Length: 284
Image (cartoon, rainbow, N blue to C red; front, side, top):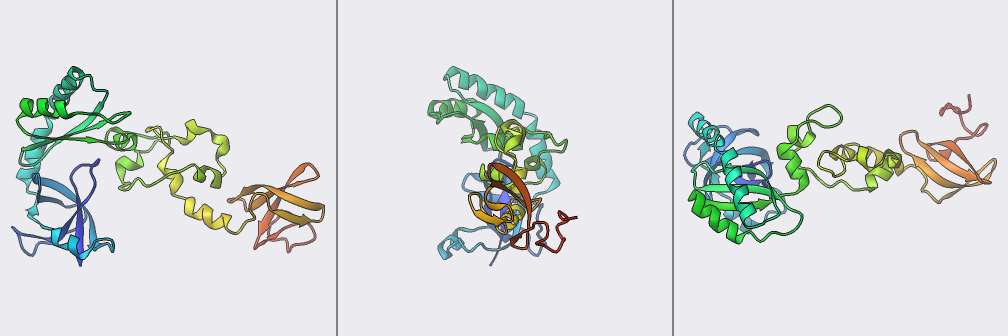
């Protein structure tokens, strides 16, 4: 069974639809297309982010809930959305005033109006859970629309408002990275970056940079072929304990009689002068 994923806003999750239209038959579908769909909250325009086989974690019962799309978004649809965006700045200003009125500690990041104009979604960050029930009532009275408030994380905020990273390129999450994924401190150890400091390893969002994840698989592959820190290895100079492992250089640091010596470690063995074939270059 083929399905598509449709995303309405960069901070929203993706939703499954059938790769067919109820209002236009036989039209081709591809990733990147803007489409009009019917949701529980009304009609909206989204972008196709995936077209392929149905994921295995979708049950047969879930299949029945997956609906067809309505049609491709027309130029009139896109023009209408662009016109609405001119009001977003005022929407955010009005919402912020109401947040201040209710003394809510929340930072508004973005707002989005559905194609049919019936719903406004405000995206915000907050350091803790926020009780915004009274705020929603005021927003409904103010805008005469359905109101949806969605709390997002600082990484999503950077994805919406971010510009360029310290590398000089557009933020990956802004330019092309669809799934942010998990980035943890193990990557810093694996890639031997502890000496860089948190400031240099953090992105504009304040979290560890997503690019640490790009080469992690290669580092893991290399590290699997090297000894672990704490292992003991017999050398010509005596028994050495592994105190450092360098995946890129394929070397290990051995502590022998109080001194740390770095040795190449290739093809599952330590390279020492007079005991290897010279491929590592350390014996020349």
